[in-house]
Amino acid sequence: MASPASDFDPLRRLLLKASSASVGLGGLLATGLLQPSRVLAADWNRPAFTATSLTEAIKAASVTGSVESGSIVIKTVEIAENGAQVPLEVISNLPDSQNISIFVEKNPMPLAASLNFGKAALARVRLQLKMAESSRIRVVVRAADGKTYHASREVKVTIGGCGG
Image (tube, rainbow, N blue to C red; front, side):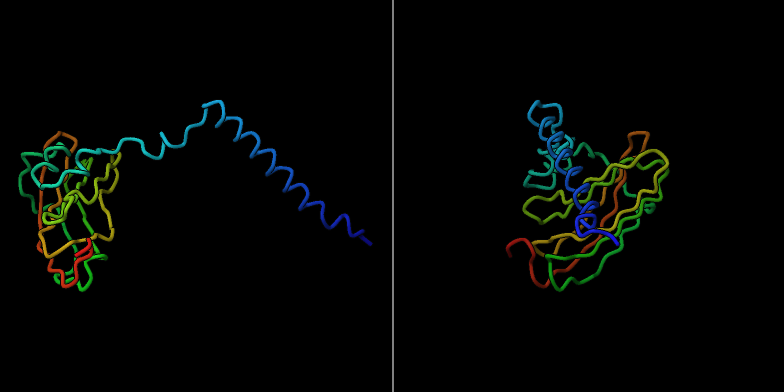
């Protein structure tokens, strides 16, 4: 028959492992060898995301001079009842798509998302947008050769989601 103390052995081992791991992590953080903030905020383009006009945002995102393309598929609703949650799916059928940037023209900060894709990755994204009012969604795709392409779609919003 097992003693009551032996029932706690697995729990004791788990607690000892967890405490030694936290001491090790604490030591790495204290010495500066581990800096998670650098990883989490790695390469985001602050000027593009904080731009207040569509022209400024496109310029800061380095996706100027795009050509309209039918190879970019935008799937969304025609009328969104709530601008705080507008479903959007973007599929780029352009070969070697490296980046998809999504702009909402009439939002206070037009750049809603910018996503980078690795070589041979399927450039497809599904997300929820926040829209202040009825507006045109513009999707710009940068291909591996550096050329940029765009497609757009109008979405009507009945209740604004950006404080409107």
